[in-house]
Length: 96
Image: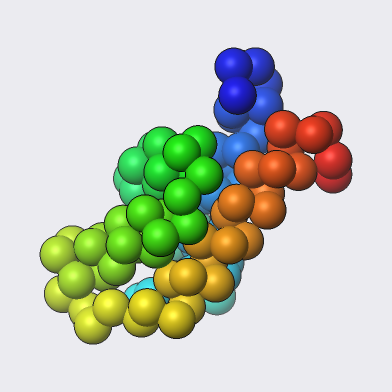
């Protein structure tokens, strides 16, 4: 993916998925916490561009355990990884 607008759209979608769907610390119902996971977006974006579901899930688990001190939720992380790959495809194809 080389189109800057598509990359920006994918980045936005990743940020939204991390906050509203992944949300390992449970803050998605708090508007003031909207930027809570934004610092992880670029790291996850790089994994998504590699189109490697396992790599994305492992990275999410690494964030949960190393950065947040939580137990890794492998099942949810795989589901999120699959969703992000779907979004990557949708953005690349120009789908809404």
